[in-house]
Image 1 (spheres, rainbow, N blue to C red):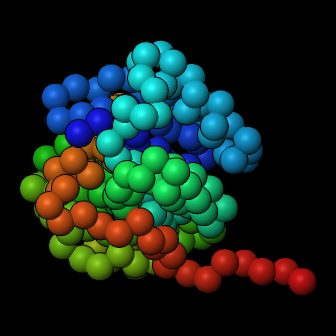
Image 2 (tube, rainbow, N blue to C red):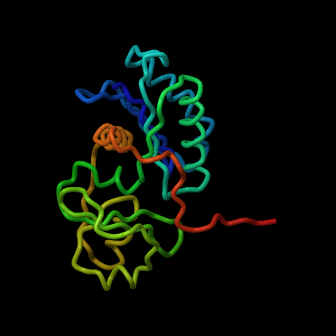
Length: 202
């Protein structure tokens, strides 16, 4: 199965084309905003570099959160649109799962909330979740020591409480696609995972 995997949940757009045997192409670009404007040109660039057409894609893998509300919505909207237009399945992957895939060590996935707290989920060495996803303060995480952290908030947390961190090199979307491919028989629905309400100003 050839998957287009995408992640727009944080300060980047990450894309990959992959199947069970190989990664055909990947593209990742850091950005604070403008995900919606960059996503389609980057997908076109990705497909062109792999010499793949939309009609050859068998499925879409997309991160469902938690992360930036706007970013999560951009990714899910694009994935659903592709799925509908191409009549192919859309598979959800949490940002925690994408971060921990391939690590093979117990770790806490710690995602930056852009506030004073973190989105957190603990995993074992097999990549299985040991806790429910939660929002945790620095003091709450300090009480959980010792643990190793990975994810977009890991460096900041390490500076605050001194926990060791794992820095992952592979593009986010590659891990997202591999998670989806690993459970095609029991996929996660592509529904947003929000751990808090959006900030709304009137």
